[in-house]
Image (cartoon, rainbow, N blue to C red; front, side, top):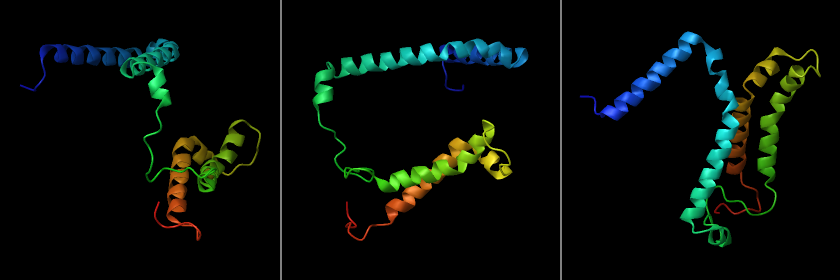
Length: 147
């Protein structure tokens, strides 16, 4: 009827019931999950490492092979990428006053910077990505237009 088998339907119902239990008991009922996140991530990382080891028949060949990313839009092999460093600085700069206000190291911070700090991950990524994109579109006079 809806394209799922019995096992999928039972899993859906079990997780749906679990969601209802968490909603009824409140957010405090899932605090115990926070104690499991670090060990789970560690186990997942080792499981992925073991999978890569098995798939590559050991680490020797995998680490000895040269990179397959020889050319492309994001390839940069001429030392420090000054445009990327400036873009990163531009992305971090608007969040610094809000951070200093959050740790109470600065008084009289305008509300705009405190609001930006609450969304620092978004503003940083947006400003850094946007400015890097614009910087990479601007060509240096000594640099050819083709990669």
